[in-house]
Length: 305
Image (cartoon, rainbow, N blue to C red; front, side):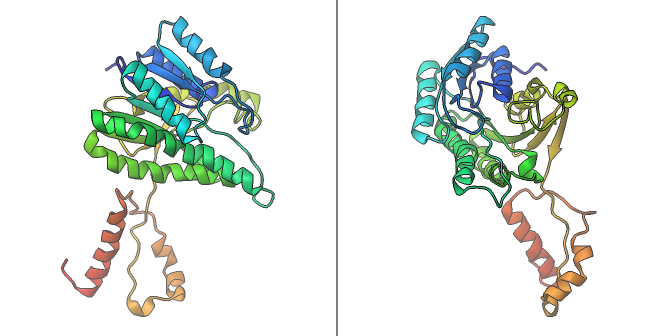
């Protein structure tokens, strides 16, 4: 099976450099018409220029592909809507969205300014919401859509000095979980990528030998798979240096305590059993947790539900 995107229209945000550039080039090479979106700012989100996006568009066109440059700031909903309207007017639809744009304003929590926390949330989490919102109605009308949003190990596992970035990236998982459920009936599949690569976002964090292994192009196959017609939905994929993995949020089987043991002391006494992950599983929805807890309580009480 060869995955192709002929006849599909894709938006890739943050596509002027690094990961986004690699994704835009990859999708175009497999037949997609690509909106190369990049605000063109510095790593901290300041400044702005359309030149990076235009450079990638030129690369795509020279290779025989179709692309347009767009400088929308993803944290500005009106600009994002205008980008989607422009793509739809030119090419008829937006079928694929890769929400990749981001900035960094790293500081330890004690030194982090309120404005730096708010701006990173605004670009990463709110900006991703804006992009999804702007394409959603069109995807529902056409009963087809593929969306990949971008999380990070900093949000999934934690990283010193990135309270703003980590909070935004953890929020992506919650956004994916809900959109994947709401999109099912209209064939809209929503997934999340957790990439690690040598980009201007990471160049100061890794030694040269490691950077050489972590080319942005190594992430793109996961993006293309998650945007393909036969993609899964509600999946978190990790990718870097040619390695690919699936990441899940797991919950232990847990322990139901008698009402007489509804005390912190009893929780402490049973914590080893409560935290035993030998029977852990990934729940498929919020209500499944409720059903599990009620089922355990009913079994203790001898109630048949």
